[in-house]
Amino acid sequence: MPEKLHRSHGSGQFTLDQFRSLGSECVFEPGVLVFHPENIVLGENVYVGHYAILKGYYKGLMEIGDRTWIGQQCFFHSGGGLRIGARVGIAPGVRIITSVHGEVGTDTAVLFSPIEFAPVVVEDDADIGVGSVILPGAHIGKGAIIGANSVVKGEIPPYAIAAGSPARIIRFRGQPPAERPQ
Image 1 (cartoon, rainbow, N blue to C red):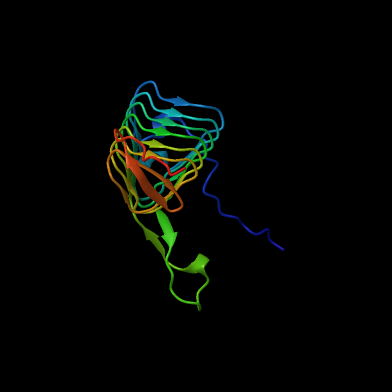
Image 2: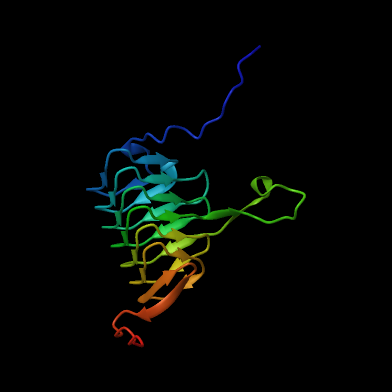
């Protein structure tokens, strides 16, 4: 009996010349995996931490701006398009997803329903806390802070501090924290 063939998305091993564009002084720590580097653009001095996965896609562009820091074990998927600005801090274990299976009723398993794509944008100077999940269509404004283990969908305005699941705005940077009742 012939052996069944298995499909693969590849090993994730890459060479620097495979990127669509790669700025100077980028750092890739050991264990980083990159898929479809031809659809990934990295600015200058981008740090990609140990065991991070940059999951480019055959369509949709992943763009990461200058001096952005990507922590260990992050997972970024750019099928719907992913734009991360300059000087963004992304803590370890952050997941950014740009696609989801649509809901088409009970006659079709969710796994086999159509995939819906939506871009994710993280503007300059933002900071995303450890373990957070950024869902398709999210837009995180300039200088916003996302608290640890938050789930972000929709829009977070510039300079907002948001946390929780789903993430809610706690206050804006530059405003004093609200006094807590005793």
